Amino acid sequence: MGVGYYGVAVLDELSERYGGLLSGSYDCVDRIVLNAYFSLGHNPGGFRVWWRRLHGDSDEELDNTHLMRMAGRFARRVRAWATACQVPVIDCKRGERKHQLAEEYLATHTVGRGVFLILVARASAGVWEVTRSSSGVIVNLAKKMAFVNHYSCHIMDPEWGHVTIKMSGHPPFAAQVILNGHEYVAAAARAAGIGFTKQGNCFTAVADPAGLARVADTLSQQAAIGRLSQVCDRWISSACLCFGLDLDEQTRSGFTYGYSVYQAEYSRNLLFKVGAQMDKVFDRIVDRTRSRLDVPTLRTLFGAKQRPGRNGSSELSLQLAAMIDTSVRPDPVQSPFRAVDIEGLYQRRIRAALRSDHPQHQATTLRPRTREIPRDHEPARRHGGALHYHPGLRRCGLPAREHPR
Image (cartoon, helix red, strand yellow):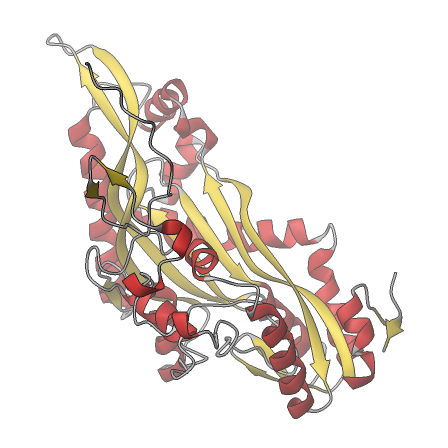
């Protein structure tokens, strides 16, 4: 256990070292992603039982045509309801950041409780495929992965703020529920009368840091499981699944969701008394960290597996190269990269964490130049001809080839 500061137990050495500069701290569950699934519909026998419940104990209509009709009915109902309730439906292209579209919409519109935006995009999901014999008997019922439309319903909840439910339009209607712990803390602090100023995912000013810490601790308790189940059950059936199965069909077939944790982010937030002091601490920490990072490590961390020159310079590679270049300072808000986050008076995207003062990192692409090849990586020679140097290949010795005399 570390020292206590303003009633909050400080557990790490960083908080203890800079405790004199802090007005408080709090630990908070940040991003939460839950998988919602109908367990009976994810195996062939269970799916067939569910289908019979839905169609009067008969599976005569269980074929690919009727399964596709269910997906088509889901899509038509979504757009018809959105038109009637004046909720925008946006068809997203490949590579678009859907959460940014929702944030931009919230910044320019005032929304109330319920669904305020629906985004449609294609993603991989399990789809059932039925094979029947010439006499009409079901021979095989198998699940395959296919790219199908997913519908992201963005919902404003009074307790959790902005909630996103992403659901496949094909049965068994697998879904993901995306929540933000900071949104929950903000709503709970507002209900408790704790004054604060929030910008994005950060509390920039807090009137009662200890009170905010007590509110944030509620998400780390066992009772948080019940809160998560309540918010999921409150919206997933009435706001999303109803497009595929109305309430009567859900009850008749016994369609209920189970939930499992897919992703959870936990953050420690340090509230600095003076913002300038936080800037100095942040810059010193990243300066000590960046010297240990190299280009291969960065490519692994940020998923830039393909070389920039192979299929054209991708946006990811260009931004990575810009962050390595000391002469370019990417936008700290729009950049998708985050390294060591010091969450204090405000969080910010790193702008200098990955800069390097070494001249070999000044290239516009991640491929090293020919004159920068180390001496121990000289091109291998075989039969008198030089093999071209390739940065993605490891150097290895070639065994001598025996020629017949």
